[in-house]
Image 1 (cartoon, rainbow, N blue to C red):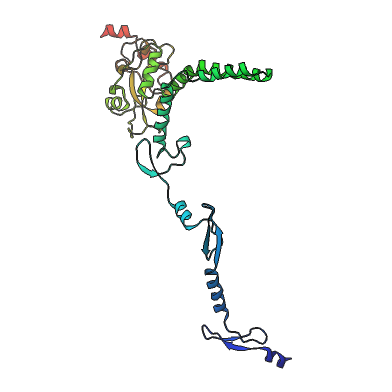
Image 2 (tube, helix red, strand yellow; image 1 turned 60 degrees about the vertical axis):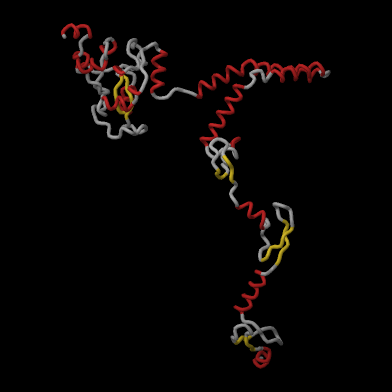
Length: 322
């Protein structure tokens, strides 16, 4: 048994690297070692040629070493190249903005997209307001030509809807425009004062920076300094507070004026709510001066106790003493 196995075993030398090789098929001498055979198979796979149909241009191209390609060299280069565009608003050459909805491919950013949308809305608003009249006339002509009663009923409903749209399109658009352009900040306070028929002031003197510099950036409710005057979102950010709130049910004299505003923390202003430190502030002429003359404390929770009511006299009696 051992002799027969010895006669079948062949020994040789690898023709690539010269290493002695033992084994091989029966009756043959091995010519390559295992490593050289694997390298030869890899080289054959790298040089293999495949004919593939391009998914982009539908042409047949030759791929060397890969059978999984889907695009030819030309289509692959165009696919990888970023698509550039010129913004219709600012004119900058940038990559195409994909998240623009109907404005995708026209604008470079969300800001330019909003400007383009507002322009289009303005153009539609300035266009012919009777643009629904052709639809109404077309429905009427169809009703006259149609013989089927069911189809005529459907067209009558379409005509009613078109007439309703033609009648209410302009008022609804005006309402949408008013909702879109809501007043902010100082304009919002002035609008509230105007709605209640109270006096109001405008200009830079009513801004947060102007009122804060006048009050030395000290909260007039808790009397603590405002450490970050530039912030607008934190609980300790500054805000304009009305000494006598505009929405107070008994307020009939004081609105959004310099004599009725002060600087305060946002948290303190929210804690104060729509209350007044003393009832005498509702009838005085100048709430800011009356706080200093009567020594009224405005701290939320302390301002509504009985001490302030006893300390503050009526405005007429105090004016008579002075």
